[in-house]
Length: 54
Image 1 (tube, one colour):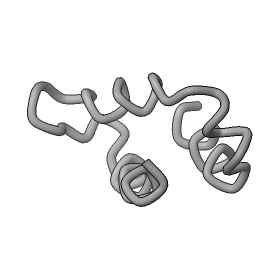
Image 2 (cartoon, rainbow, N blue to C red):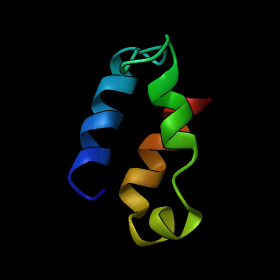
Image 3 (cartoon, rainbow, N blue to C red):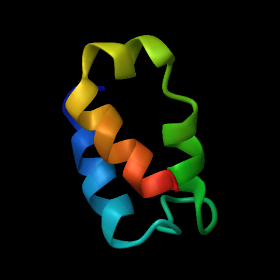
Image 4 (cartoon, one colour):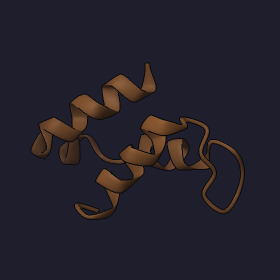
């Protein structure tokens, strides 16, 4: 997750409705399921995620 999540955040910053393989917005839906423990261990990414989802 440490490698892929920063890439996902880059994509979502450019287009919050970015599509993975299923439907528009599925990447955002997947990142929403990331556990809080991950965000606590990666505060810089948590800050980026907070800016994207608002």
